[in-house]
Image 1 (cartoon, rainbow, N blue to C red):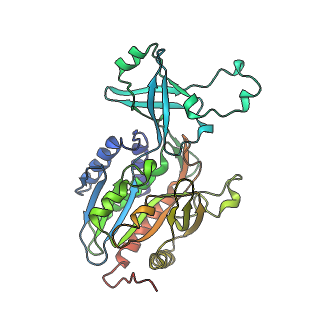
Image 2: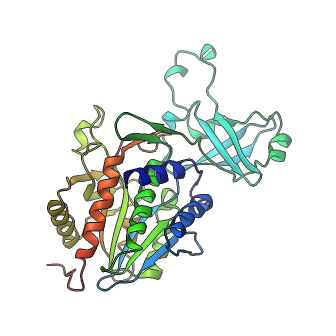
Length: 360
C-alpha cells in the first residue's frame, strides 16, 4: 500500500494544477481509477466523482486536486510577466523561485526574479517584495516573443514541480497539499472497488479549494450526503518555530481536527460532529492506530462550506501532519498517509444503517 501511495503522490506532484486549471490532474486521477475498475464522472465545475453503492447514511469523502500559485496579469514590453497571487502564497518565500507557466502550447519554465545581491542596498536586503512588485523571467526578450510562445494574460503559473525523497519514509515536494490527500483517496477507491459491505460512499476530488474553498460545495449539493469527511494537511508542530501551536508530529499517525477557524476575510471553520469523532477514536483504538488531535485557528478547509449544504451535513476533518505549508516544497511522512488510509477503510464499515447522527 505504501509504495502505491508514494507512486501516486509522486506522479501527481509533477503535474501543474492551479485552481480552476486542474484538468491534467483530474485526467491522471481518472486514469488511475479506471485502471482499478472504478468508474468516475466530472461535473461542470470540474470535480471528479466516483460513487459506490451501499446501505446506511451516505458518505462524501473528499479532497482537493488544485494547488495555489499565480496568474499572469500583464506582459511588459521587455517580455517579463507580471503576476497576481491565487491562494495563500507566502510572499516572503517567492524571490528566485522556479515556476511553470502552463500554456496551450506547452509548459514554459521561468523564475520569479530576485534583484542582484551586489546591487541591493542594506534596507533592501531585509525587505520582502509584495506580489505586484515581482515579475517572472521566462527568457523572452519582448512581449511579442512571450505571446508567440503562448503566454497570455490569465496564464496559470505554479511552483516548478519537484519531488525529494528524504530520510526514512519522508518525502518533500510541490503541492503535497493536497496531492497527498488525492493519493490516499485513490488507494481507498482501489479497496472500495472490491468491498462487500458498507455505506454508500462518494469519493470526490474537488476543485478550487485554494481559490475560494467552494468547489466541493457543488458536488455536495448534487450528492446530498449525510456525512462528509474531508482529507487535508494538518499543521505539523514538531519544528522549533511551530512547537507552541500543538502536538502534531510527522510519523505520529493520522490526525483528526477538533476545531478549526479562520477569521481573516471570513468567519468560518469546523467543529466536528460528535458521532464522527467517537467513530474515529473507537476505530483507531481497535485497529491499533495512533491518532493525533489538532485544534487550530488560521485554518480553513472546504468542509466549512460543505457542512452547510441542505439540512446540514455531519462533518469531520481528517488528515496528515505536514511541514512548510504553501511553500514551494512541503514535507510529509508516508507512514501517516498509509495509516490514514487504513483508518478510513476500517471506519467506513462501522457506518451501518443504525449509525446514529442525532445530536444529543
